[in-house]
Amino acid sequence: MKEEQLEKYRHDLAFLRAMSEQAVKDFERFGYTVNFNADMPVSFEHYRLQLAEQLRYWCKNESDRIPALLYHIDLPEHLLPAGYGCKAVDKLAELILQRELIKVVLRKHYSS
Image 1: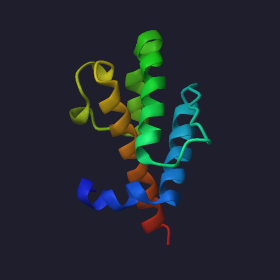
Image 2: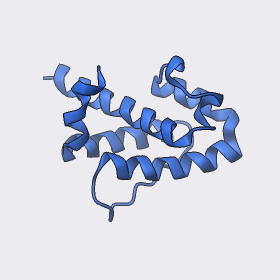
Image 3: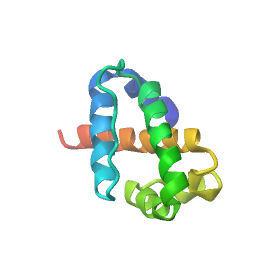
Image 4: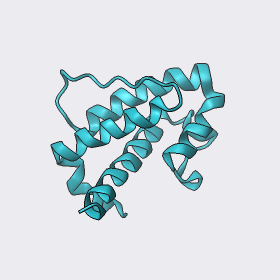
């Protein structure tokens, strides 16, 4: 799915909430607890900032587990910044959430 096609879903509250739920579920399978602040406005950017903060911690303390997580999320390796994204955490957070959003969109369109 191209970024232009995905753009409208990046502003749809229902899809964003489903994206965050998908991310939480995928991270939990690897023992990571993702916490998105429910008091913040729902937006792709707010989710990205919150995930990036958590990824910084994991990259610093548990970087050896990151590649398996990214494989599970189904993030293509050729899209990743060097070092599995731990050197560009903001970009990594964006790529992860974009992939999670694609999963939600495809599920919605093909489950109907």
